Length: 224
Image 1 (cartoon, rainbow, N blue to C red):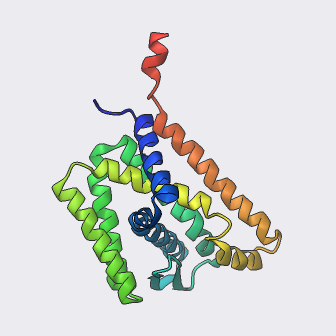
Image 2: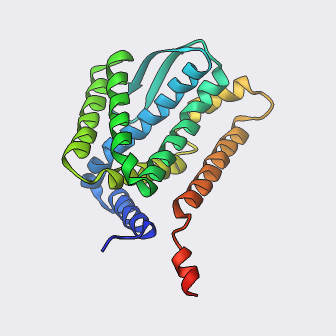
C-alpha cells in the first residue's frame, strides 16, 4: 500500500533523526554526503546570486569539514550573501515539493541537479575533494534516475534533510555571511538579520507545506 505524503514525511523524519541522534558513527557517515550537499546548495546560492546580479563565479569549495566558500567577482554583494542561506533553503524546499507532488518531474530534476554538480566540479573547480564529491554524488543521482524508480523518494528525503539541517544550523552555518551582510546593511545588527533570515526560511517552509498538503485531506472532508 502506497503511503500518503504525511506518512512518507513521518518515515523520512524518523530515518533522519534516528541516524543523526542515535546512529552513532554509522549514522554520521550516512548523513555526511547530505551535509556536504547542503553546503553545496549554500555555495551554489551564492553563485546564483552573483550571476543574476551581473557578477561572475570564480570557484566553489566544499571542504571535508562541511564548510565551504564561493569566490565571486562583481554583482550585488548583499544579494550574493543572502543567496547562500536563503538560496539553499529555497533549493531544499523545491526538492522536497517536487519529490512529494510531481513524480514525473523527479527524474529530470535529479538529472539537472547532477548536471549542475558536474558543471560546478569542472567549470568552477577549486580542489580535488570538492570536484570528487560533486562528481561521485552526481553519478549516484544518475544511477537513481536510470536504474530505479526511487527518484521521488530520494528528492523528498534530500529536500527534507536539507531543510532540517538549514533550520538547525541557522545560528552557526551562515555566521560569516551574516557578519559581512551586517557590515553592508548597517541599519540592523547581525543578530537581528540572523532572525530575519530564519523567519524568511520558516515562512518559506510554511507555504511549501501548504502546497505539499494541498488536496491531501479533501477525501476526509468529503466523508465527514
